[in-house]
Each structure stands twice: as C-alpha cells, then as structure tokens.
Amino acid sequence: MTISPSAAHPTGSGVSPRTALVLLLFVIILWGANWPVMKVGLHFISPLRFVAARMVMGAVILFGVAAMLGELRWPSRRDWPIVLAVGAIQMAAFMALTTVALQFVPAGRSAILAYTTPLWVTPLAIHLLGERLNQIKLYGLLCGLGGVAVLFNPSGFDWSDPHVLLGNGLLLAAALAWALLIVQVRRHHWQGSPLSLGPWQFSVASALLVPLALVFEADRPWQGSVELGWVLLYNGPLATAFCFWAMLTINRALPAITTSLGSLGVPAFGLLASTLALGEPVTLTNVLGFLLIAGGVVGVILADRR
Image 1: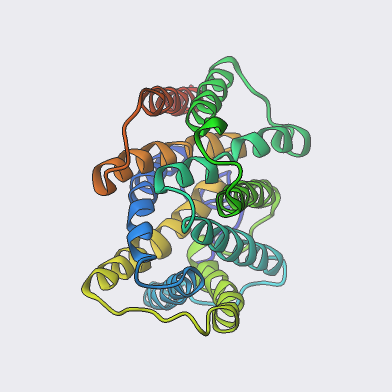
Image 2 (image 1 turned 30 degrees about the horizontal axis):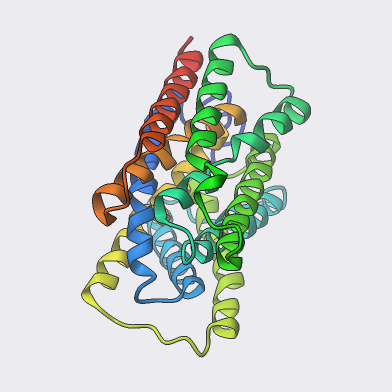
C-alpha cells in the first residue's frame, strides 16, 4: 500500500522519529566506514565507473526488493520532480563529486568536508521551512560545526597544489548540493513511499552516470580483483541501496536541521575508520574535532526526544 503524507505517521515518512534516529545510526556507521572502503576501491576502478556501478547495483537491488514486497509501481506525476531531484542531486551529483575528490584528498578529510552540509542547511531551513533552533539544538549546531572547523584546518593542506584545491572544492560543492536537496525533500508533499520511489531514483542516477563514465573514462582501464569485489559487494547492497533508502526515509521523518546535524556523525566515524583501516594519522585536532561532533549529535538527539 502506498504511504501518503496523511497516512501512517504525520511526517509522511511511514516511520516514527525514533525509528528514523535508529536508521540514522546505521547510516552513520555504514557510510562512515565506507570512506576508507571507497579509497581502496579507487585503486582498482576509476571514480565515475565506481559511482555508476554503485547506482546500477542499487537500482537492481531495490527493483527486486520493491517487487517482492508489492511496492513496485510507476511514480505519480506529483512525485516525479522529487524522483528526478534525488536521483540527479543526491545520488548522481553528490556521489560523483565526492568520489572524484577522493582521488586527491585523504579519506578522513574527505568525509569531513562532504558533511559540512549543516553550514548550508541551517539558514535554508530557517528561511524556507520556518524551522527554529531551540537551546539544545543550537548547542548541537555549535558543537558540530566547531568540530568540522577544527578538523577542516585550512592550514593543513597545500594551497599551491591544483589537485588539492580541486578536491576540496568538489567536496564543498557536494555538501551544498545535498543541503539544497534536504530542504526540497522536506518541502515535498509525498505520494509514494521511499521504497516505491527508490528504484526510479537510482535509475535516474544510473542514466546520468553511465554515459558520463563511458565518455570521460573510456581510456582509463580498471583492474578486476578480489579486493574490488568486496568493495562493490559492500557498496551495492549496504552503502548504496540500504543507506540511500534509509536517508530518504530519515529526511522525510525528521526536521531538515536535525537530519543535517545528525549526519555529522558520518565524518566522525569516517575519520576513525580511515585511521584504523588506512593508517591515516591521529592528531590532537582530530580527537578534539571528533569529540565536538559527537557532542553535537548527542545534542540534536536529545532535542528531538524532548
């Protein structure tokens, strides 16, 4: 049965805010751990091919799951704008920008910059959605952004290297794109459920990314290996199909500011995973930034529970 905004739950998401917070925890762990996994994958496959493969696998998996659960249907005319927006912005643009940038920027730092989204979401949500910051949520915002500022540390990279500048710029552009989408998702009046719309969103992303990969990376070979197989296996079902479905569900169930602040847990976990898996250095600024971001996430969760 299609879940409409008036059914199941007042948010129109089909899940309660408490369930959405549980989903957010899973997304934080799976997407955070995926930053070093993607870094490894790029040793064997070019970035656009990598992202295109993720989107195609995500589409195939969600088409199958939606069909088995009786949720596979053509989106309504009212939902097509959001299907196109999610597929083009969150899935195609965000993932392409971050994966290309990952060639030039360490995994931990990439996760941090890609998740500066609250810098853009907060003013947009206050202005366009009428959301307000209570004291606890303001504490979460300040802690989370303080942690990002500490970890960003502009003096920590070479401004004269054009590849470094390109990588960091692409990551910030990806964060801005995701912020715009979060606000649009929150404003949309949904007709279909996340599961019924997910396969079509992945199809839109695949239709954009596969031709781009074929055109721009035709001369870049890829190396088949056991490691690449494991990377794709993790990225297809978990980091792509499940996490994008979960994130869309979260966006619909929680306020935009809450979603963007809670997602700051991804770079914190990504920094930890990159340190453990890739041996990226642990510094005092890394530890301080991690603690500030964790405090910010706790503040947001407490604010919503109240």
